[in-house]
Length: 242
Image (cartoon, rainbow, N blue to C red; front, side):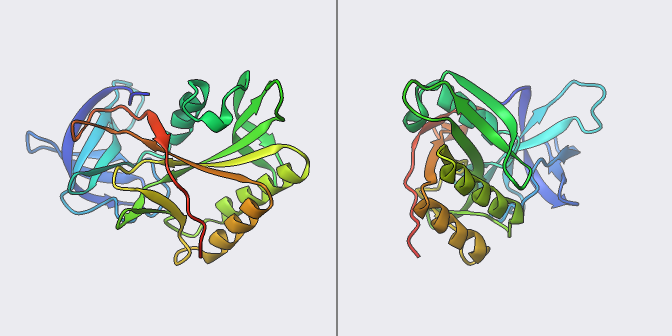
């Protein structure tokens, strides 16, 4: 899966109003880019960091550039565009990279379900021997000393999703939480108990109730440099120890 559009590098000046970022381009000009990330982006917006922007030629767009990648720490890159993980996950499932979810004939996005009026990221059906799978996708970019933490801010929505997944298991279906690890410095994924202890507690309860918890990492780099390829390349361990 490649980032669509022409890519260009720049340097981060600042992120503000959540969805805006000022970027200095190689010719020393400055542009305002769309920052498609509703989270805190903790650890992913250091001053002066190298960034990768995609560029759109759509005349209806207010902002021409979109912030896609950032060098979060020297040599470690992260994808900060939270519109990408669902596509990354779907491609990896349909191409057999996520082996735990292979064998399903159909995959649908944004399917309504649950008593709390949610939309599941991916619904898999048509397996010869397994029940339908309800897959919730989460983007992991908060990295501290090789550990990827989720969430990077308190997430009531994420807590709701865990309750919905547990209800699917109780109804006899498969329920899967899939962490898309979009930071090349991450080696293991853990719940961010210091940020959202309620989410960590509920995640462990969900796992104990039968919700499958998986993590797959994106390659992101080619010979140490970002190349726009967001494809998931393999599994990563998840630790739910307190």
